Image 1 (cartoon, rainbow, N blue to C red):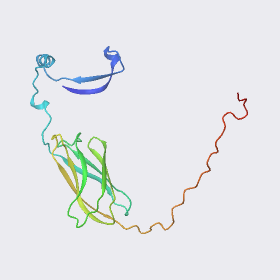
Image 2: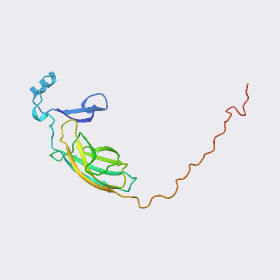
Image 3: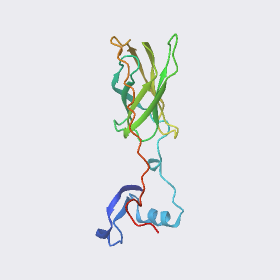
Image 4: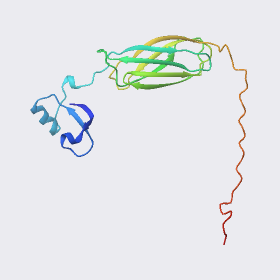
Length: 182
């Protein structure tokens, strides 16, 4: 049994409410009865895969000048070419003589696609991997090698940052001004 949609139109099925889960069962009437009584045993094709091979594709990697974030986008696929639906990605610096501390965040934009933001890298050339891991064990680990250079900013800002303007402070007001006070 699997969920077909969670956005079924309830009144179409004679059910009060607005939304309805719709599920599909591909077994026989007899196996449905065992499912309904709680004795059902899943068949091999009903089980999630274990350590299924995963492949990665690097969409883009932009390495700007020092002080700006490195941005990258990757996709992870199952053997049939469909996107993975679990897991996460991260950048790992590998083989660099010196790697400064950096921060990174990954954001899944859709199934199988992530954007990674890396901040805090100084000017230099970096090698590493973007690694995919799936803690559920459904998909195998995968990685893709990357190399990029963060350049020195050729035009550093020499203009001092403006001082904040001091806004005038409001004078205390009398909410009863002009009224009769008893």
